[in-house]
Length: 492
Image (tube, rainbow, N blue to C red):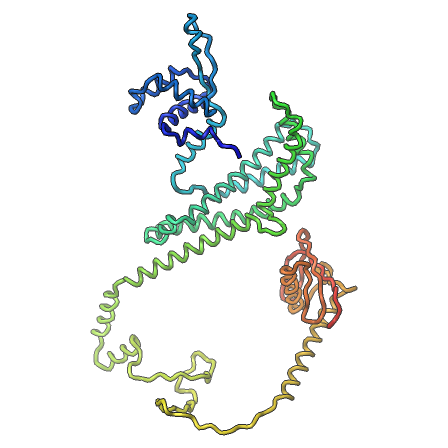
């Protein structure tokens, strides 16, 4: 929670001079030149048009200020002192600090980024991540006798590809959802790029669906307990790096760090107990982007159709009428093009036939009573008798209960010792499959996975997503996770 004084030079009054000075130090650091003399800095500054009148005294003051802000480290230069005065003058050489290097590196990235998100949907990154996970799984099947650096390379590859996937996809989706991109998609110029965008997104989804299931399967098998020896090798590699600080107390922190990183990778692909995985969210957002583009293209087409001139269509119709030999033929053409003009159309409540090819004149007419169009007209009503439909309702109720009882007996036929195991159930009727899938769907919304069935009993649903089975029915086969239905309540 402390202030980052190292960033003070970005907002100071003389930020222009400070930024040019530190950018020069950063470039020298990238060339592996650490300690720079003030004379070299002054020579570089005066070579710029904006710093031709830059004074040496001002440079020393600003270098001293950068040392106070922890952007530079000063070291006294005693190698070239030829006189006592030069030695007493305390000539310094300066080196930029790690904070300054990272700040300048970040600023260069921001300058390249501009005011828009970039990113991409790279299909190859998922394939590379899958290959790295397979390599890790292959190493775990044998004793970890290789040098610790080899295992650190595998770890770095996994999280390099994962970080690329996470940042690039998030940035590209933000770019698509940005206000500028949405406005450009609503212009007619977007039609040129429509096919390119949709093909790009479609290919990404296809590749994602091919590799994501394999990645998720690998991550389910690679839990923290199985990776414990691998993490010990990573800690051993860090321990081999010579440092002056005492790192003995940090080994437990390193282990926790590796576990947290691995947990974040698993959550991104597999999700949590109460949250959806980022992979599923990525698929949903990509599909939504395709739907949005389709809607934009449809609206653009509708606008173009609305403002399109129909002059050529009318001229073509006029040519047809001009070629008619007589008035009767023109009337027939008009009836086909424009429809009947003087016929009153009547709407019938019930169709007399379901045959689409039947002629109207072949059907029997329907008598309809036309009411006067006046506000004072009221229909004459006669008192009618109340009819009791008790017998008919009772027959329907008994038929419904009988049908329910037959369905219940059919369900209980597959129940053994109060359980239905899909792996052992054999071939079932389509109705039974529909009922069992309905129970599974209702159980997903219940906390204890219990379902109150229509047959008066309570069923607890237990699903094993790691074990896939084939449910045979009379109309086909369904590959699904193994499910056990346990009867846990009595009848009503």
